[in-house]
Image 1: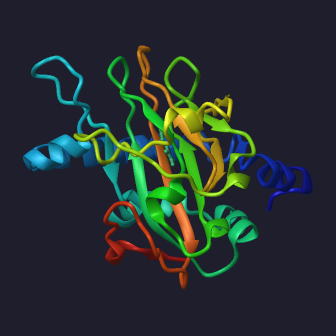
Image 2 (image 1 turned 90 degrees about the vertical axis):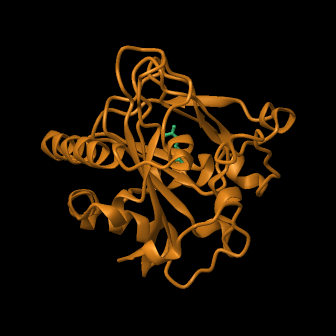
Image 3 (image 1 turned 120 degrees about the vertical axis):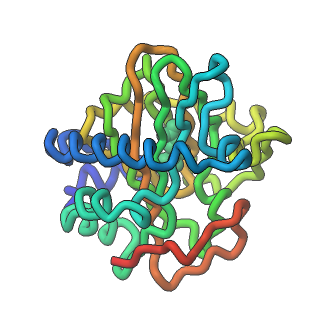
Length: 246
Ligand SMILES: O=C(O)CCC(=O)C(=O)O
């Protein structure tokens, strides 16, 4: 459970970091499973998948995953390792009981070629009926630092509602808050050690920079919502047949 001070930080700032949440052994197992999954997936990517899942700005002949979708649904090993009772307790404390992970993602942010994720709000992507009942749990698989592209948050930005987003024509997955709005919310780096978690409210502005460092910055994000809450205005197509209830 979160203590009072952690709860207040989440409520005031819209995000909270907890280091040392998962043991090193769990992190190693997660890395093993993700590498296995990437290898199994690599050979079967359509052209469209390649545009979605791979880093585009890489030298010819280099194939690097940008992300993998729905690890919690697709990889039971990851589900069992990562979705622990202590995590579900925290999620229930923040957004209530009878939850699902309706979507999850591994962000690979590879060394040297990891692209940036612009400022956005998860709630613009998801379009939930109740904006206060969307919780993202972001698990650092590597040490996430300023150098390798940790998250940055706009403190308190979740109190300002959901803002209109825009996306570059060839990158529908890169929905972003327009610069003139984003600049009103100074972004603060939130480094997390491998095995730590960063929790954020669905309306909190966040972004990550490119990774020019020698080290990958992998992370697993789980998006929790109540089982009975519809997504009324999602910006992308979410496959709700992969929802995992708890
Ligand atoms: O890991 C990243 O770079 C982006 C994460 C993110 O946008 C999220 O977890 O909602």
